[in-house]
Image (cartoon, rainbow, N blue to C red; front, side, top):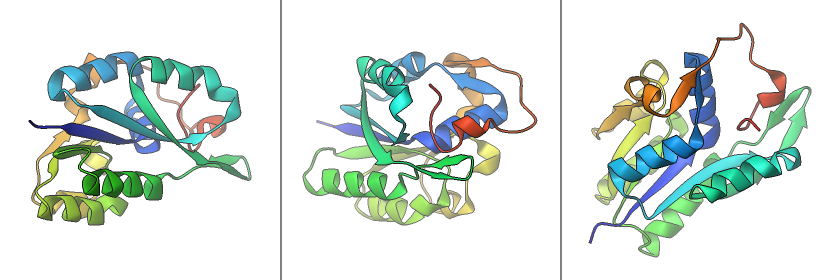
Length: 176
């Protein structure tokens, strides 16, 4: 039996969609992932911001398993990079046989080593990159299947006006 887990780099997904002019409906997105891949678990890695508890409850209600990183303020930006947490959770799940194959949702080249590891272990189903134009070459050159969300956002998001500058309050994490 094929057990698929999905690991989402929440910041990469959110920022990419926003830069493309989309606001993700996370309920619909979870539904799209469920219909297309039938995952056991969908992990969403985000920086924790106490004021967003209700949003986190909403995400849990629709089937996301949230993995948090403590955030820090750097000037007006909130930083909560979850790359290490995502890699660690994925490797733990691999060695405990929590999945037979997995899907990574990111365009961040920092995950190139994880993609290589999973490819070599024949345990990566595919990579889903939030933006075709910003998917790192360090992921593109791994000889794995890549699905680009550019062609799919209309299924689970709404178009928003592109702001000339990113909202400082949204730096480093998902919206509330």
